[in-house]
Image (cartoon, rainbow, N blue to C red; front, side, top):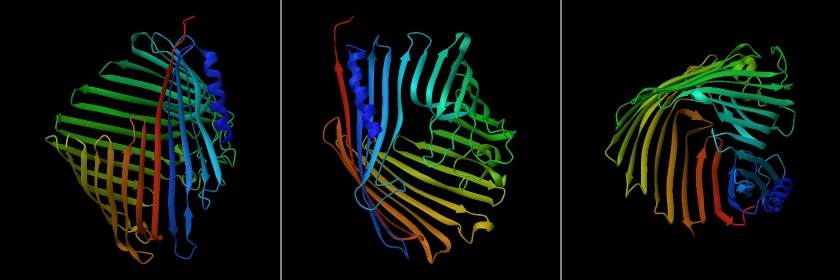
Length: 431
């Protein structure tokens, strides 16, 4: 928390020295969460953590092509401790300088930032750059130190570098190739060829006709020598009011989660595979009603097949200020897990209204199991929300939820949110 406040203060002090004219904008988002838990056999607890999220953007620094961006959060517990990190906690999510070139959509970033380039989805302390090249090509690169996600152990490497190059035929096709290397990763894997995490991938976006769109990627783990993931989506829109979608995902735990820092949850050592495929159809009946039907099948080697299917009706009224929905899904699980997680019916109903000044919503969801779980055959939760925009920049809102499930006799939670958007523009004489 002190680190975040110090960085923000230092940034604010430096801004006037970077430029005589600067535009500053940002957002302050404060959350007070209230939760009471009553677990059979344990003492009831009350949690009241207060969390502050703060974002700051400063544009038009220097020659007006330079900008500064920072985002962080801090938390303090006002009652029982809500996490294992102590009564207070905080994190510095990103903070970087960015220079945008006048041509070719070129830009350079320096600091802490997120990278989403093909096979890379990383948080990095370092440098990144991208530029549009002639003939439809694009190049992006990054390098630095990977941000430590688990503060209790060294689960990240000493350095990370990678990039993506792509070729685009505007409106029809984009194909990309990407890769990354993270050096000296400590994971304790017996079968890995080396301690470096090396990944390569290919991705594609294709729209051969106005009614057909294909999007997907394949990732390969060079370290383990196997395909980590296939993921593809097909959308078909024969008419404006009707859309068919199909998807296919294939994940190999051994290759996809080889370098996870949560091995107890994503265990790559079992060599399991998870495939899922299915589709949906969305039919818009005029401007007010939308009907959805969907099906998804999961296949896991050591467990068997799970099927989820159902539908939803959505209704929009009062120029989309009022939106409501009713949904039902059935989940059929394999015999291997029915003793601990039986098949169940799931129902949901919700309604919300946003007038521009006032916001309100009610959302209820319930599961009814085929067999008892800890002597209970159901689980449900109801969430009610109410909000008010005090001004265009300031909004106050809150949620209250209550539920019961096989693990908790009752669970009461509440959230109070205060959001403030600010903008400040100053003008000075040009150099």
